[in-house]
Length: 415
Ligand SMILES: Cc1ncc(COP(=O)(O)O)c(C=O)c1O
Image (cartoon, rainbow, N blue to C red):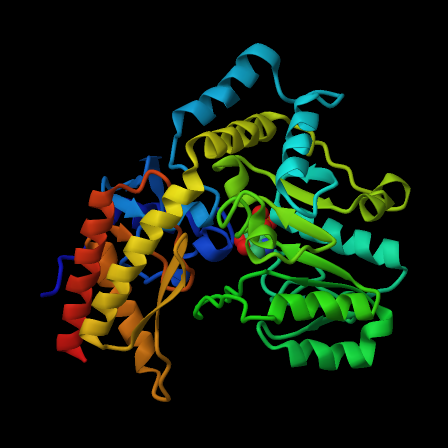
């Protein structure tokens, strides 16, 4: 049965206003066309735990987790309290750096296999750009082989407006889980290649998540050694979600440099470049990195508390366990209805996509499915995988499985 459309009056009226205030009303992936237009809310009012409430008062179980930063839940008291303590008792924005930065650095070095030194920034894009710049400076070479999303900066943006061609001329893309595609590029350009950068898990927008096939990451590691090229893991999504040491610890392949952000601070703005001392020391003199806000300590306080809590409560084990049970049930339901819906991902990062067909019917199925889900007040993204967080309860998951089943039943009838 079709579920009733949500009341989104306030969202739509704010959207109309915003169209005259901000180009595209809201930025990037939060724009309405990246969901199902007229079905999804545009603005949230607040959130707590696993729940978010939009400005029309609709309450959802959220599986997008702010696109990754929320690892515990919204407004996690202990973490917010650590931040408030910093504000009330010390302050966070000064002309000099506070030592809390060193404490966070020590923690990352303890946890992450490739980390011998760290640099903190405020976004993943900055960390990715710093990684590439450092690699170019250290190796004295220019070319970059890349695979995955690394943010919005010049060298890797897919949308080319305002980017001189020459700024991307030395950047080549290879395919995830296709070692040959990298090998071919390296045969041609290996001698001039500064770094290979990739996300350790493949998570292209709108497509199934891919785990590394046996030997893929190891093969990339070997190739980079063969050509004297640095290996960079972009762990912005996998860091502090797959394991405390990142995907590099989980899959046992150690890169030279890697980037962290998102889940590290449960929502506070942070990016980190970590890596081998010898390479990181390039930043001492030859690579310029500076920003008014990079040393601000709020995110360091949040990150330290987030990591401390994750260690103490073994949160990732709990998330994996919950995710595994959710995955098993989800797969069963998808198989039962057989409408082309497919599960992919790893337990902490589940995703439902639709099998492609030549007539593009899968696109309507996808819109219908996600529209039904949001009407059931389950917030999942049609083009982006979801996340399981610590505050997802068993009831949340059971409710969601029922909502998925209802939505598939609707699809089965319609198609
Ligand atoms: C894998 C990956 N790398 C880099 C980035 C860029 O990070 P930010 O959005 O914090 O600049 C993202 C953001 O989604 C990401 O998913």
